[in-house]
Image 1: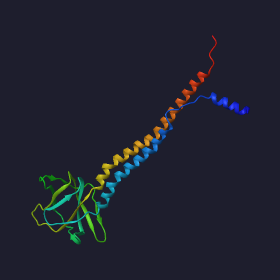
Image 2: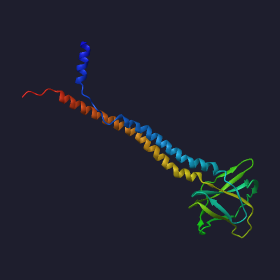
Image 3: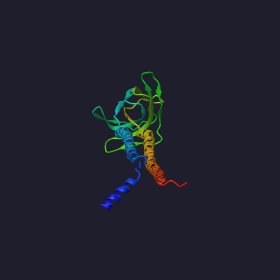
Length: 222
């Protein structure tokens, strides 16, 4: 009984402290990491779609000006293809395109879309299909365009199999800064938030203990 009485008096002598900020702030760290991972997943969706068709574009047979429909704006790449399926049958295409140039124009207003030689050459080869990237271009908006093969010397156009595919490298260059920024913010916050919360809680606790100790001191005699 004496021990219980002493414990009760001791408990009543200890002041009730409310330490701020709350420990709930620590939950911000996993929330930010999950958000950064979500940003990465969202950014990966168009990359996976582009990678699927980057080296396997749908082929089309051209002997002259040919209409092309782009379903999205952005950077696309033009391939010269051999032994490629076109409308259910395999077409040989042509390796010999020396001197052949291409133009791409928008059908709605006839505006020209510049075709640029890529800085990095890409090609694919296999037991059946083969292809080589010829140009990259920036399509301003989805819609109908016209691809025009031309020989500067006026020679005839051989039967060609070509195809457009999204430029996965361009998509990666556009999305990588967003993903890296999201992870940078999450990592900095994962370090800073616990440190700030822990420091402020210690200071707040020390201040409350000091004030409680000052209140418990008996008044000085005059």
